[in-house]
Amino acid sequence: MNYNRIISFGCSHVEGDGLDSQLEVYSNVLANKMNMSHVNCGQSGASNKSILYNILNFDYRVTDIVVILWTHAERTTFFHQPGWFTLLNPNWDPQDKKIKFIKKYYKTYYNEYHHDVESTHSIHHGDLFLKQKNIKAYHLLQRPFENYNNNYFKDIKICNVFFSEIRHNYPKANDNFHMGKEGHAALADCVYKIIKRNNLISLKDCCN
Image (tube, rainbow, N blue to C red; front, side, top):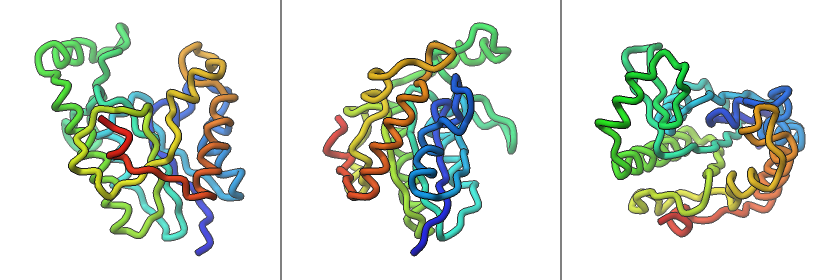
């Protein structure tokens, strides 16, 4: 099959926060390497739950390749109603109008195990959904040894590269926080080689 479009999902690192342009995002650089077009579905502040939501609500073609950079498990999303949701992140912006709601959640309701299970379910659901639609997908994690429930990961393969290991080896972006374009280029090169060589590993073997 001739694949012709890369669809990327993730948080601010995929949306391109701190970069001069989304053209510098790793998934766009990857698409250029593979002579494919690119659709960027990154969402700043996204949780794994909201990344899954975006995966489930995208209109795919059989010739698509999906790359997913899953984010930190401690984030979550509260869905109020269609089109209205709150992204919850413990590293909240003090100027955020939702600060009271976010602060209350992490003080009163946050539980690490709950978030680990929630992320496990999101990754597992996303993987099964894309397999059911016969969409080729590649999963990337923020770091090895994420705390997930491995019982669900027997059939999930991930790219043998971790975002954090790339991120800290290259200069930061313009905002002095996110990964800069050199890191994105390096990550794109790694993912490109993984796709070409099918260098995937079992998720249950690299996670706690």
